[in-house]
Length: 220
Image (tube, rainbow, N blue to C red; front, side, top):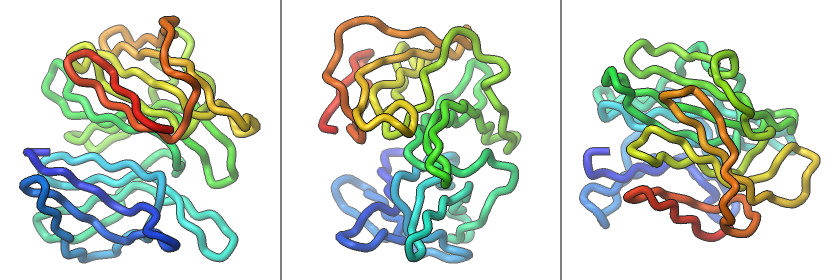
C-alpha cells in the first residue's frame, strides 16, 4: 500500500510472532509500535490495507493443545492501536483474501475458503466493503460452479482486476494430497468458471502473484 509492504505474525522458530512490521522504503524494515488489544501471534492469517489502516482476518494460534482462530481486527494508524471489528463471518484460517476497487470506486475485500476451528473446510465466499464496513455473503448471488471447499490455496487478481483466479490448495478436510485445479471468478458477471488449461503440478501453501496478466506460482 502506497509503496509500503506490511507483514503480520507468522511462525518465528517455535513461537508465533505477535508483531506488525513494514518496509518503507524497501528494503528497510521497521517494527510498528502496537497499542490497544494486540491480537495473539497467529499463522495462516490474511491482511489488507485501506487508507493506511491494516485489517487482519483469521489465522490460528494454539493454547495448549487447543486450536483458537482469530476474528476480524483493524490496526488504526491514527492512534497506533488494534481494535476488534464486529459482524464478521465465522473465523477461519488457510483462506485467501484479495482487495479490489469496483467500477464505482468502492474498495472491497473478498475472502474465500479456509478451515474453521473444528477442522472443517469451506468454500464460503464473503465480501467486506471498507466504506460501509459491512459484510455480504456472496454465496447467495454468485453464479456458475464454485471450487470445492479448500484451504492453503492462493487467489490472485487478473484481467485488469476484473477476475479472481483461485489455484491449488487442499480440497475438503479429508484429502491428504493437494490439487492443481484452477477457477476464475468474474466480478462483473458474478460467475465462477473452471479453467482447463494445463498448469503447474498440484500444490498447497505456495505463493502466487499476477503481473501484466501473467500468473506466477512459486513453491508449495
